[in-house]
Image (cartoon, rainbow, N blue to C red; front, side, top):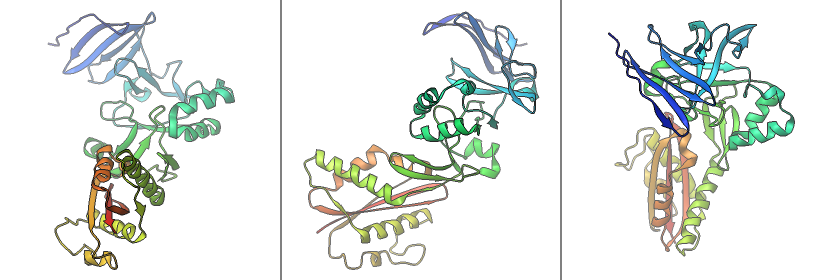
Length: 333
C-alpha cells in the first residue's frame, strides 16, 4: 500500500501545497501567481508535470516543441528545484532522464525579439554570449543534456560515473553547457581570457590556447606578489618547455619518484644550462575543463612559494585522459 503524506509550507512567497512519496520517489505541488504546478509519479514510476491539473508535454500540449508538425515534448522550468526539465511526448509527457535533446530554439519566444532584446538577453550568458547570440540569429537551435535525475546540465560536464553508464560511447569526454541556456559550446569560446577549443560537430572539449593560459597564470602570480610587496617574476622559455614535458609525463603515468620520464628522458636534462641555479617545482592535476580556472589556493601557493629571491617562472600544461596537469617551475638567479 502506498502512503501519502500531505503538508503545507510557505517558501519565499510560494505555497508548497503538498509533498507525497510514491514508491520511494518524491512528488510535490506548489502555487505561484494563482497557478498550480505539480510533479506526480505514475504507476510506471515515471514523473509527470501538471499545470493547473493538466498533464504537460503530451502530443496535444499547445506549448509543446514541434518537430515535423508533431509535438516532440516540452521544456519546463521547476521553480522549487531551480531546474529545467524535458517532458517527452513519446512517453506521454514523462520527464526525460539521461537524455540529449535538440531544441529548435535558444529561447522559446526569441522570434518575437528585436536586435536590442536579443543582445540584452545574450549578455546574460556572459562568456557564452556570442555563441548564444549567433545561435539565436542563425536559428540553429541547441543541444542540451539532462542528467540521471532529469535536470538540465550546465557548466563543465565530464562523462564519468553515472553519466558514463548513460553515454558509454562518450565516456571520458568533456563538454561545456551555458549556465543560462544549456547551449552546448562548439568551436572556439574564450573563458577567462583564454581560448578554449571544442569540436565543431560533437562539442567535445579539445584543448585551450597554452600561450594565453601561461600569460593568465603569470598575471595572477605577479598580482599576488605585488600584494605582498614582491617584485614580479618573468617567463623563461627553457622553464616553459621543461614544465610542458613534466606535465605530459604526469598525465602519462609519471609518479614523480624517478629521474626518468615515461618517454625515457632524464628529468635533469630538461634543465641543461640552468644549474646550479636554485629550482623548485609545483604542480596540480585537475579535470581538463577546469584547467584555466585554476583554484585560488594553487595560485596563492605558487605566489607564496615565489618569495623574493625567485626571479624566473616556467608554466606548463598538458591535456590527456580528460585531465590537465599544470606544472609551475620557478628559479632564482
